Image (cartoon, rainbow, N blue to C red; front, side, top):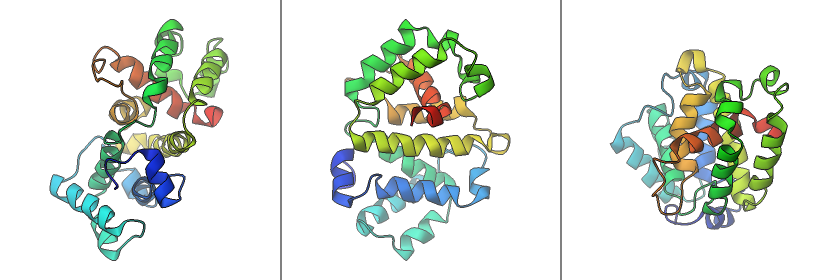
Length: 219
């Protein structure tokens, strides 16, 4: 079962560190610079009909890639990006699992990271290397991430690198680190009950930005 199975179960079934649907969608976007430059990539949604067609074809193909699927992926890059995000949102336990949700949120709040290490400095070594808060924050977050199941950790690493590549084209696609953190956070981190969607929104967006912007130091 593609949708409804846990990330651990899916990786075990496919015998792959990253689910095929994520791998194929991300690689499809990365292989063409025009796709990477597409305005609003990951923010704009593709046709709902096409998104559902692609999802059905992934289910039908199982662990292989059909000509039909390749043709569908070539129709619209925004639909491909939407398929990737929808898969993440539908995982029973998100990539940043329920088990590490509170430790991550508490780390951001207790260390006032949004003020002391604003996202505009994240990933900019000239700004972070001189900031006394950076190394302790990095160590705290790395320690928390070490408690993730290996499948969650590997997918987080893959996505952080992929999203970082997208930011390199932000002059064209208008999707900088902040914007991409906003659109990916709902699919990557959430609390178990959903009660904290609003109250923790800024912290969740920050966590995604911090991980993506500093992925070379984290992984």
